[in-house]
Image (cartoon, rainbow, N blue to C red; front, top):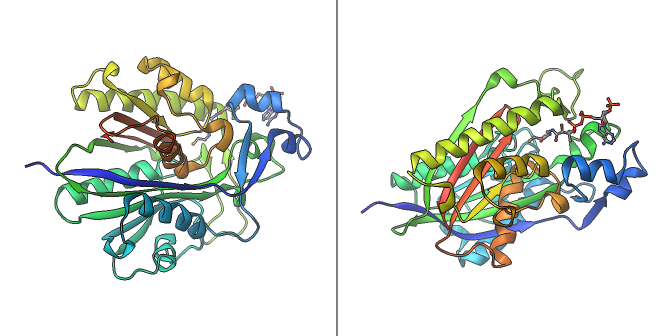
Length: 318
Ligand SMILES: CC(C)(COP(=O)(O)OP(=O)(O)OC[C@H]1O[C@@H](n2cnc3c(N)ncnc32)[C@H](O)[C@@H]1OP(=O)(O)O)[C@@H](O)C(=O)NCCC(=O)NCCS
């Protein structure tokens, strides 16, 4: 009998502080109207000073574990997708493991820009389907406010902080049907934080060539969506829900239009969360499960795009 990876619990966490477009108007040469028209963003959540990525991850994880009614000690694997880890090393996953009070399971981080959560889900699916592990915690957690240059209106208006988590385990009912993961290193310089290990002179904030990125995003997302449907012999009309990475409402709209998925079948949180990178899909997914839109047995397509560049999709039956 075929084994599947099934999502058995979800959780999310958004920091309390909300930064609105009006707040940004007081800080930058920008306007609420410009931000809403170009991106669909109205507000974003921002961490309190000193808050760490593993702390956001912990709250989301505890909620996901509670929803699944699972003892954290039974986890085989913890993966945290993040571009804003607590430290260079140890991994945020190890800090999260410690916060959860558990010992001796595999734990590491994935860096795949905003596609990190989709990469993690796709990778864990391979471990579970081949029988290597039974149960895993997968988290997308980001504190992008720490790597945003608050003087730069091109990028400061786009990002927010938050975390989302899922608990997955092996099952015999359909769960993840396929994942499709891509990267194209030729585009490393269109979205990046140049500063890093070994060179203190380089900028340690997000740099982005927004226009170019926009075009590449729409093309690669449309391609990966077609690839996913084809691999599963599915028609566009068979999808119940699209849960896209929440970078920009116009990108979401363009991909939904190509897919012929009406917007009321797309989970959209970019207005309230802005772009939370690898946290955006698990945040949106959790919200739609808790408010009753996404129900058991429905087909969900997740798709993401981010720095690298990376892009990918996961098709699943919830
Ligand atoms: C960033 C983005 C919203 C900009 O929208 P755009 O329609 O491409 O706008 P442009 O970059 O052409 O800029 C238009 C003008 O607005 C200005 N502008 C840029 N940011 C602004 C802001 N926050 N407020 C007001 N004006 C702004 C620009 O300086 C430019 O002015 P100019 O015409 O005088 O030179 C859009 O390109 C985008 O969403 N790209 C993808 C970003 C993304 O998804 N990143 C994350 C991927 S994971």
